[in-house]
Length: 587
Image (cartoon, rainbow, N blue to C red; front, side):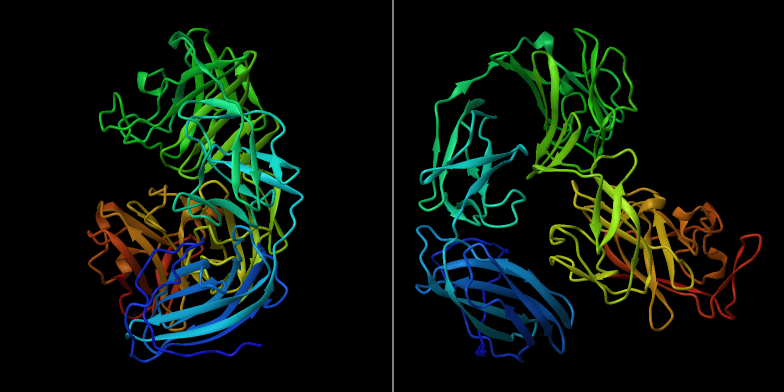
């Protein structure tokens, strides 16, 4: 059992990190405001191995507004092994998070301390401490090397070290981590302050200054990584280059690229009968040479002008063809500073990879992998099946029955995924909780861009829907145009109003509000003539509205008063005796 310790302290605001440190989060000044409250449980607290997960759960509350929590795990001499910090907003937060206990170098069995610090916006703070007893080092039988390029290689035990079986090709300055599990769900080794450490916030630089192939070995006790003899790749003649075609250019003036352009040329290299071609999104705002160093979501395929050959994707296999077919393209659902790489063995393309910004997407014959994990035909969410979305190889969709208050979980952690805080509580945790009404929810999960989209389908009177231009669920969204598959649900509140959150890009967009689920076939709009609002937009039609001109997050509030009626001819009519209202509240 634990004995909570309560005191008034303050922490300097910092970014959330998980790793090892010699500084036990030094306290800067006293806090003497009203304290927040928390009722927490920590399990397990005894007999842990380094690399096991400790669950911290419970309720955090404040009479006015929570600000942040910080959780640390420290050893007997005060070194910080784990640190997690999360900003908070509102009067309550339901915490449910798993913390992996980092393995120190040359570890020994000892007792650790877990501390939770909770701040509010009234200069108050509450601290609780928990003992973790008899934490010991694990025994490893196999390790795995995860590269920034997306490959995963097993490391087999060889004495005190773990070693790859054959030479690995490392692009120049390739980074990576060593992990204890094939899905990287346990201990991993990265770097902190330039030194290898478990749960290090940075990756290990493994590649040489130029592309090379070599073996790698790792010692999980001393944290030493050893590189073998290097073999180098030679440049190929530019006339053999492949060019990228398609819709992934990050420059809006490019649109769809249908013919080879110099800025889309891939550079080729060869070594001992193998070749690869590589390209990275170029910097610059001139559309002839650049695209601001970023690709856009879209599709692409490869063309080699010297031979007239194309590299295509038929949904399951790589196709080398003498004829073009844009319907057989490689799909990419995220934007970023990506590198595209095609690998060949004796002139046959065996792999096309998209990598960068900490993730990778690899297409090969018969399989697609994301961050080294092979995609399956279906995944489960709360025991219900989501199948591969047609036309994609890593986006899953389906209709799921969900109930208010239900815990939403998957075989993997939901913490990295981006979801709606209007629908779910605990977004950012390993599992979430549904806040809105029982319903069938159209659910779509993109394992590459991290999008978790859910939308209730029963429509009015429990829900209505928002769609438009110059808006999205979040500022980092990639789709900001009319799209029935990405409408924003507005849930009915206890007061009978409909509310939801969106990000306004400030480009003067127009919107519509639907009383039927538009993806279901009918898209019946609320009539703007029934509203008394400065945001009605009759010039664009009877169901058009505008949004505020200033960019930022907004809460939209619609009051339908006594409600609406859908006539047999699909006309939507207000039953209210006074005008309906539409309000946007800046957040």
